[in-house]
Length: 146
Image (cartoon, rainbow, N blue to C red; front, side, top):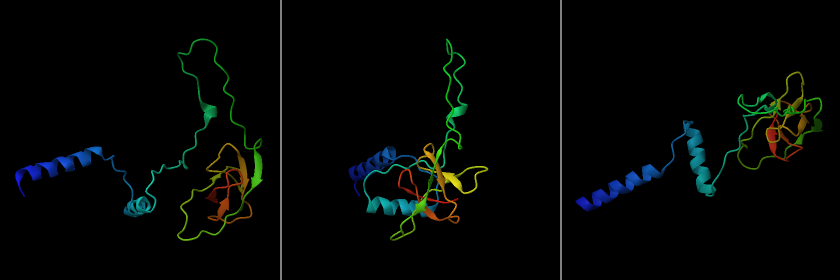
């Protein structure tokens, strides 16, 4: 290879690595799955947050705020939320779905909050065993019973 071609290849590789994003530390199977999905579905994809849930009722106003503070209305307690029963999810065609779990409620056996709509209300999953795919009555999306 001649000298100008080597320089061009080196610059091309440097530009490629400079434009790429940082790597996430995940398992090899996640990487292979992501490569397969990027080939099968080449459009940009954003991840939905399923494990994080913020409790807005514990927020405090900044200490340096001037004037009277506005009262923060707490989110409704689980007793005040509406309860809807979950329905069985349709059978998955092809490989197993990668869906989140419902969020269990302490002292409310058989009731969960939806991972997709945690502030909408409660979901009654008493008739389903653990790990069963159910349909969210608020959004129509599928999640697993905890």
